[in-house]
Length: 149
View 1 (spheres, rainbow, N blue to C red):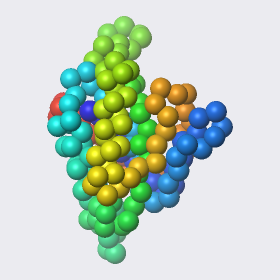
View 2 (spheres, helix red, strand yellow; view 1 turned 90 degrees about the horizontal axis):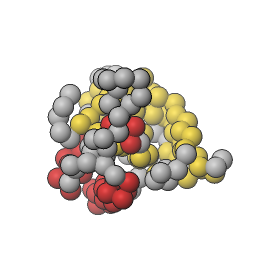
View 3 (tube, one colour; view 1 turned 90 degrees about the vertical axis):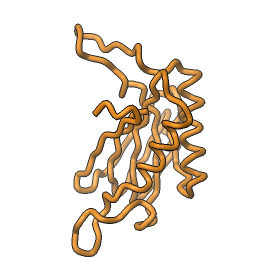
């Protein structure tokens, strides 16, 4: 699984001009599912994201986690995180999970975040979405459960 994590002061996602998910202070997670991902990848990524110390403490040092600041999560599926642009001019999607598997693991990720105590707001799987955010910092991080970077 891959995630682009953005620390935000606000974010929302719309489908057909209707807000499907919105948060204030917290993390926007753009989530991509790999064809070989399992529940092990879900658990690793959810725990990692929720416990990342990327919020400022009283001294302005990134030392606090999502739970320390009572932050919120917005999770948006994004298969394009597995776009391979190394050859040619059109990305290859061959390593992205097929839609049925990706949707199930996306839903399992949401369930895992909820189980940990951070029920996320969400987009709509396979929909054309508009994401609006105010990146705080800016802070943007990349995570990969396969640890390819």
